[in-house]
Structure formats: C-alpha cells, structure tokens
Length: 168
Image 1 (cartoon, rainbow, N blue to C red):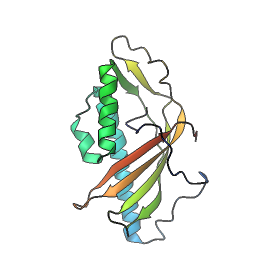
Image 2 (cartoon, rainbow, N blue to C red):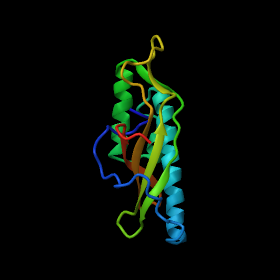
Image 3 (cartoon, helix red, strand yellow):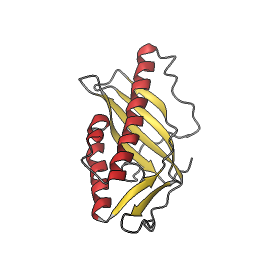
Image 4 (cartoon, rainbow, N blue to C red):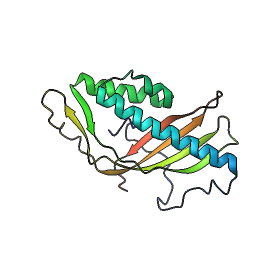
C-alpha cells in the first residue's frame, strides 16, 4: 500500500477522471480557503505517513496532527503490520492532488481530494536485508481522500482509498 493509503476498495469515483476540478475559486473565498486548508492537511497526511512508515512507528505523533478515524486507525494498522513482518517503506512518493468538491453546507464540512500518486520510487523493503517485498511494487495510480473540518476548526484527513487498478 502507498503512504498510509487505506486498503484498495471500491468507492464513488467520478464518472470521468478527466473532469475539471471543482471551481472553488468561483464558489467564494470561504470555499477557496477550505480547499487550501484541505490540501495542506492532505500534504501533512502524506508527509506524516511517510515519516511513520520509514520509522516503522504506528504511533508516530505526526499522524494525529493530520489524520482522523477511521483513516488514522487504518494507517496505524498498515504500519504495524509491515513492522511485524520486518518491513518498512523507503524512497519517494510523488503526489499531485486537487480538490474536486467542497461542501461547507454539511455538518461537518468536507472536501474531496483526488490525487495521482506515483509510487514507482516508494518501496516496501525488508529491514534486515533491504530487499524489496515481493508483490509490493507500485506505479502511478488514483487515490481519493476526504478532508473533514472538525469543531476546533482543524481540517483532518478522515478517509482515503488507493485505487491501484486505476492508473493516472
């Protein structure tokens, strides 16, 4: 799995992946600010996940700063599972996210994010001999995430799915 992404699973993918991103700038300054905050939380999530995976530490403190349940628990379980099998992530994961929808009229407010992750240089390796874990190779694939605004005003990533069967 890529940088803390949840298990591969089906979810509501837009009919056309080529659809333009939601016009959040046209929706007003509040939606634009929400998009910016959601993307900042998403970038923090990816960075925190990479740090935790490289350290093989499912309780890495940066995770709680950017993730919320159920995704927080899923990421921690993925990292713990790799650690128990003597593996860790190394390398670089490349991300190109965009906000596709902002819903400020819901409680809680949410923003949907679509990303093209490139995991070509991000490998799951055995810590003992640095060999690549068989079947863990990755390429470019679609990932989706949900950012949720919590009552304290923070935007946290609460859901995420890697769609490895959908290249981008």
